[in-house]
Length: 139
Image 1 (cartoon, rainbow, N blue to C red):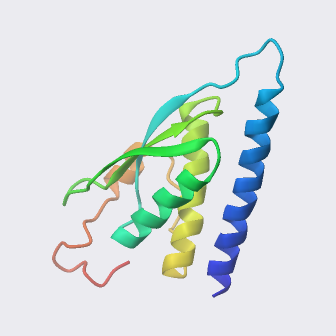
Image 2: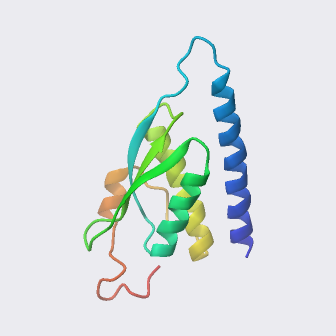
């Protein structure tokens, strides 16, 4: 229950900060409005509910939008393609997205993942298909 409330407050704060950032960029003079990019985000989310909640959380936050979802396989995790308007680099965008994912997984699983990923390669290297033999009970 506490993890759920914490995540709701986190998302509400992200909406407020995102809205302020969008509005603030409207009034920037002699500078480009945005630095749009699409980033590929391999997920640590394992269930359809986790993927859906994460994609919805990203989309509800101003300045970000999930443009596509690629299903995972036994050897690769599901992947979201996220359009970000105001990030300076792909690494900065991924850092924020993995922070949001860690908070979501804390809410859904009752505990955070072991550690935040250091990059896309680490997420893919640690992927275990939830449907594979012997892994059905693991979150």
